Image (cartoon, rainbow, N blue to C red; front, side):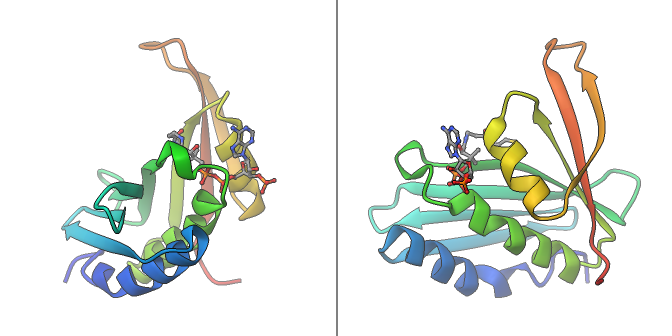
Length: 145
Ligand SMILES: CC(C)(COP(=O)(O)OP(=O)(O)OC[C@H]1O[C@@H](n2cnc3c(N)ncnc32)[C@H](O)[C@@H]1OP(=O)(O)O)[C@@H](O)C(=O)NCCC(=O)NCCS
């Protein structure tokens, strides 16, 4: 058994939540490997509605990194990324992780709105020397309160 082996059980919940937002049936596919989980949600025409990826932090099986969150441009602003946020955290909790973290580029004001609403805190801010982007590391403990 690896951390994400129960990932498929979340497909129906994700389909229900996103289907309600787009007011149309969607198909959610969760694929897993020993170190990660990828979720893709497709509209009935087969086009991608949204996606997210969770990956175990290399060298520390207690931390999961949330990344590659994407919402199709014509579906933005409907609350999809906001609705996915607690689902990602539930999946991470069910996988036994203690912390969930993410990095964002500082000018991504949308993610900067979403994360603090769900109790995430800024861990550090830095300039990525490769890109010169200002980046923000966000983190949230996953233990039940
Ligand atoms: C970032 C992204 C995932 C947000 O998805 P989304 O489903 O549109 O987000 P939501 O609809 O849940 O919006 C969250 C908040 O941001 C606000 N928002 C959405 N689009 C906005 C915009 N263009 N400008 C300002 N605020 C915006 C929403 O109003 C909402 O705030 P509110 O609840 O106070 O109204 C999506 O824009 C995207 O895929 N962008 C490209 C990839 C990316 O940047 N991924 C994240 C990498 S860290």
